[in-house]
Length: 396
Image 1 (cartoon, rainbow, N blue to C red):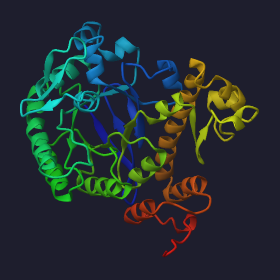
Image 2 (spheres, rainbow, N blue to C red):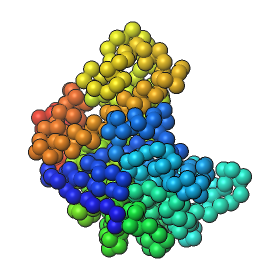
Image 3 (cartoon, rainbow, N blue to C red):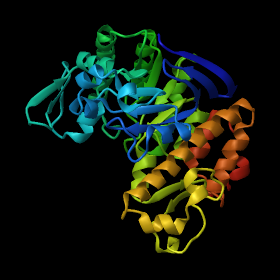
Image 4 (cartoon, rainbow, N blue to C red):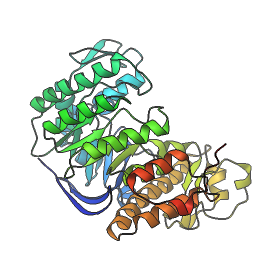
């Protein structure tokens, strides 16, 4: 195992931990920005360090197509190639195939898909996914799993869960660098608690360095979403990191952290920036709106990032969607916001004031007290009293 995970402090289910990886010592909870092609669109690696980014996520599928894993390996691995001294996590490549390629076909052998380069059929097996990730050299690598949208029901969910367990053994056998790279397994099972439980138990039995909760953030209702997270975090080992894949809304991260999750990734903060939207404690700010044209305030007066210190809403409004600089500045601000959210969660758990932090967060986002019912239900299970920031539900 090439990691050390130490829980420093808890508040009920929430934990603040130190995750020591080969390239960096991380503080959790943490958010990982997605750098598809070995880059976070519009930001330099120096800027990512400056805002406190600890782990960057790379997409195996995109990197394998260009510049290829062989070339990355030849040039000394992805850390060196992209000049990133801190930690990296690569996904397995399976999700991209299912989401980007309508022609992906999953069999016991692996994922068959049409090459976007020449249209020829290609096969990604668990073994090949691991070989590619071994060449790329990230601190954390993900097992190839059988990905199914949570909105699908029936026997396909069960098939995918059992296949994910069979494939983890092939991933473990193929993994040639276990002392330098940490292989995480992925819990599947859709919205079915029985299947999720079987999958958790199967993965925990294989004693992996860490575990991810997969197959969420794909359009399921929020009530189902938090219940799956709560079930999985309760059953996963206390002394291993827990990663909820594809989660990037600040509210979801606060809720999942209260339920005992540690790591998150999503394209949302940078993608929404490219559409002219900024993340602020109240929710979002749409910089495209004409009301922004003469607004001389910073995006968020309470934010200490370089963008909020130097530029007005009016200036960013003028740039947004017209000039690359607009999306660069908003991406910088949004990722700063996400990094600060992770640090604030960590600090509040360490200092024993996590419920106060959660209430403050919810009060800013829902000043009228209209906290969504799913959040109230999740917080009750997490043992966090948020009555002070919730208006009572009407029985109508």
